[in-house]
Length: 291
Image 1 (tube, rainbow, N blue to C red):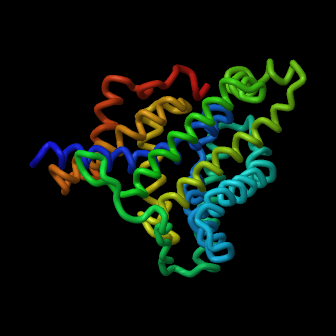
Image 2 (image 1 turned 90 degrees about the horizontal axis):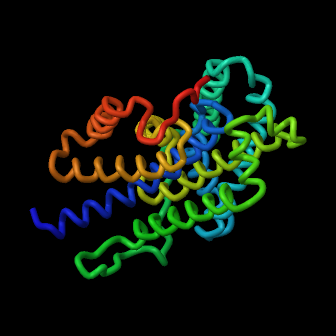
Image 3 (image 1 turned 135 degrees about the vertical axis):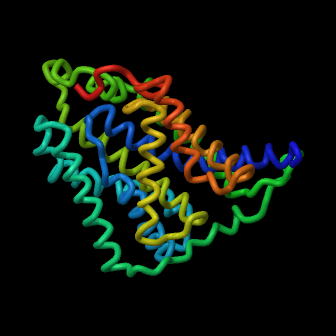
């Protein structure tokens, strides 16, 4: 076991963690503002991969898929929020939880009906095939691309939330929606946009993961577990927690697969258990978030 191999595996874990980050980021964004545990989130991830297949078949461009997929699926998420979820606000956390669980099953069955149950190949774009010499080791171009894209999205999201007037409204609405509404802000529009951004991030993660994981109807099932592990470790509703926990889970899974492959799946749950023993609310969770 050489140091180069360990370092390579750590980088691989970071690339894996970027997928976890994007999925958990959307989940945490929705929960942090709307206090909705979105059980359909992983199916929006899967739907993003399938929409990516369609866009790629029509345009022949992977880059067009990256641009259009979050817009299309994000718009669908906004329709779901407006028509299905909004009437349940104020009725307790269980109602939207059960609704989104059912919505996820409906999306899964519709994909099976219209796209079939067989997997669909999704090739890595030609410009991102091969590996890059990082001096210490060679690293796949596409995984390096994943790290770069996720970093750019995080910077853009931070700028939007911290440096723009609308971001200020979103952050204020997460803390006290009643006061924001008294000030004349249409809070329902803010909720609509946040839900669209959250589902759009899940869809983007789906199309980015497609060249690595493939495209098939059940691809969202393990992602739901992974996303909730990351969200719980980072702290429910914490965006910073989603980023740090996503990378930590990715590195943990990757390193475990190197040293003890039989424990790969279990390792993320062990990490969650250790964190919750010392930090019951997660790394960056705050008290009263479910009140």
